[in-house]
Structure formats: structure tokens, C-alpha cells
Length: 470
Image (cartoon, rainbow, N blue to C red; front, side):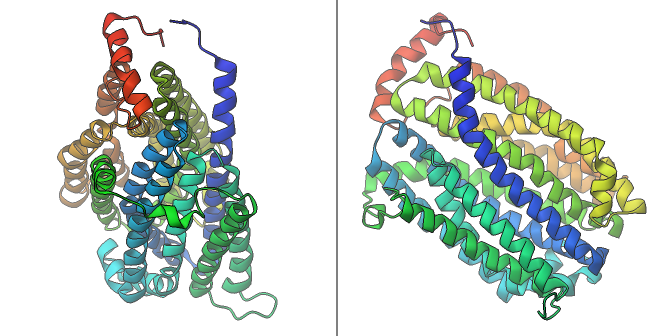
């Protein structure tokens, strides 16, 4: 086999997918940072309360992301096999599942906001602020879920610019309406927290409308082909849920695990709660860049697996993982270097500023390995192996991470930064195990006829050491 690797074509394809996705997430994170800066004059308690609300929306994200990951597995492989019918059926099933999650969480936020706030913190000062926000912002969550479902399909079929346009319109709307509603500019009433929530709902609506506008304009053959979305049969539904089940378990259980961790962090000092709220916003910046590589991994690897080019998929995956880690390392250095003005503009000062800087330092190191693990897991999923990385993450979360965070924060009462560092103690161990699995090639498990036909020869070449060197 050819021992060379087409770096120029690989990097070009990576840039075409990763850059628009990273820009979209950068816009969203920048919008969140601006939101935090704009509500900062309302007080640190408001910043902390909205940060706790964001943790509940993150739990929703974890619940529906299992279907996003499962859907992208099918989208990418069917896209490589040029099977439009398979893409349409996968999208319809994914849409139904995701919207169910979005409606449930949106209803909980609107109808039971006080219960949500009591779950995440025992500090009563945050409760009424969060309740006022959730009663309105909950209406945005089904819309957000719908736009995310469309975006996942469009990215998997290499139409990455359309979700970017939606993000630009959404973030611009959110910033403008925040300015108008929070403080009451241009004759609008001063709505404060309710104004921020209303701006969030309007921005979510604009995002959906923008994506649909460009989908109609470009005559996308998948999103609008409603008649073909629900033509399922029993074998297809069975295969879909078999592949999605490990991913869904992973995301839900990890979401529950993160909720427990956030409950512990939410019961530390008020300064720590405020610093955590700001940190979660900045963490989104890192994850935004990671998402570009994650989507590129899912598409560039999954597409080749679906088309039967298994060795190309294997070699691409190895390079994507190390490139992702290198970029995350550079981003972490930048965040630490500019931490003081960044944290100050987001209302942190004194003890909360010290804690925020410490969290950035811990995360700057941990995120390199963490994102490497995530990219590997997303790569395995796109190639058909939804079980290996999922099992590792769940086992380590519940056997190692949660017990250490709970004991250190609730029983031993360690310093907050040590408690926070315990959130990442499993990452190095999992990285070694994930690397062994990566080079074995066992994670390549096609769902298309083309991929399945090429699998025996690929595995035989790996066993004989004849596959092209990474």
C-alpha cells in the first residue's frame, strides 16, 4: 500500500469543515461572554444564578447529544456511500428523539424553575434570580434543539456554512436585544434578568429561521424532504438504536455525573460559585474550537468508512487527534495569558478572581488530554464503534471522578481548586487506553455495504502489519 499521506488535501478538507464549525462555536461562546459582561452590572449574584441555569441547560445538552452523535454516525457513513434515503431516515428518527428531550427540559424550566434552582445550589440568594430567568428562557430550549438537529445533519453532509450563518444571526440578535432589554435602552422597559431571558428566546427563533431560509434557498435534499424522514422499518430502527444506545447512555450518565459534580461545586463558597459560572463560559470557548475538530473527525473519518476506504479513515483519525490536542494547548496558553482583563470584565474580583485564575490553570493542562479523549471517542463513534469510549468514560466517571469530587468537596472540605482538579483525575488513564484502541483499528465498524465489504481485507492487513504506517 501507498506509504505516503496526502497532507495538503487532508488539511484543506479539515479546514473546510473545522473552521466554519469553530467559528460558529466561537461566535456562540463570544455571545455568552458578552451576555455575562452585560449582566455583570446587575451584580455577582445574577452572574452566579445564570451560571447555575446554564448548568441545567448543559444537562439537556447531554441528554440530546447522544442522538446527535448517533445521527452523525449514520449521516457521515451514508453520505460517503451516497445513500440519500439512509440520510433522510436517520434524520427523521434523530429529530423525533431530540425534540422530545428539548420539550421535556423546556417544560421543566418553565413550570418547575424553583425545583431546578434548589437542585443546583443551597444558596438561597441565587434562587429567585434563576427562577425569573428560567420561566422565560425555557421556551428557547426546544428551538435550540431543533436548530442543533439541523446543524448536525448539514455539517455531516459538508454544508457547514449554513449553521454558521444561523449562529451569526442568532448571536447578533442576542447581543442587540440584551442591550435593549436588560438596561432598557431606546425606550424599551428595563427588564434586567427577564430581558436577558427574552433575548435568548428571540435569538433561538432567529437561528432556526436563518437555517431554514438558507436550506430552502439552496434546496437542500435532506432537511426539507419531510416525506422521506419517517419511512422507517424495523431492521433500520433496531440498528439505529443499537448504535445510538451506548452513545445515549454515555451522554445521559455523564450528564447526570456532571450534574452531581455541579451540585458539589454549587455548595462551595459564593466566590467559588461565581468563579465557576464565569469559568463555564470560558470553557465553552475551548469546547467551541474542539467541536470543529470533533465534527471534522466525524465527517472525514465516517465518510471514508462508509465509502469503504478504511485505511484512509484510520490514518486520518490518528492525525486529527494529535492536531486537536496541539490547538487546544495553544488556546489554553492564550486564555491563561489574558486571564486578568478577561475575568475582570466578567465581574470577577478579589477571591473570585483568584479562584477563576486557578480554574483556568488547572483546565489549561487537563483540557489537552480531555479533548484528545473526546476526539478519539467521537472518531470511534463515526466509524461505528459507539461502545468502547463510552464504557470507559462511564466507568471512570462513577468509580473514580464522582466519589473523589464528592468526598473532597462535601466530606473532607478541601480547597476549592483541589476539588475542581479532581474532576479530571481519570483523563490520563483513559488516554492511554484509548490510544491502544486507536492503533488497533478495531473501532472501524461500518454500517454501509461498501464499508462492510472492505473490512476483512483491512483487518487482515493490520494483523500482518501491511497497513500503511500512520
